[in-house]
Image (cartoon, rainbow, N blue to C red):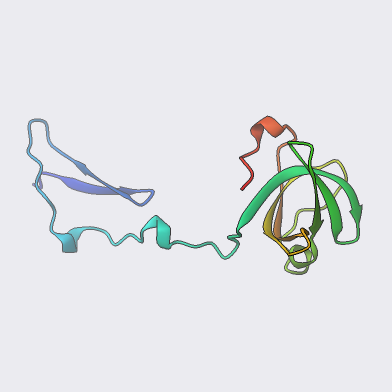
Length: 125
């Protein structure tokens, strides 16, 4: 009967010890192969993520009001063409992921619905 059994949950290896048992290191070959979190990159990863309310909408162009009151011009063309966008509705809260261009326009790669209350939004980055 083994003295410990590895359990894998959410990419974490746990070792259960018997009561009064001693820790014995499992051989490296017996450990599950898990990719480090830093090496996992989402294809949707973008340099910036903003939360706000859509204040105006004209085709793929929208104005997003952030929790600070500042407005950002967003070009949703890429997100819409790649089917990576929630339905865009004025006064709806959304999260946009993408990058700014030299003119300060935010080019969204992904647009997701967000909770209506800004207190539930993650921090902008």
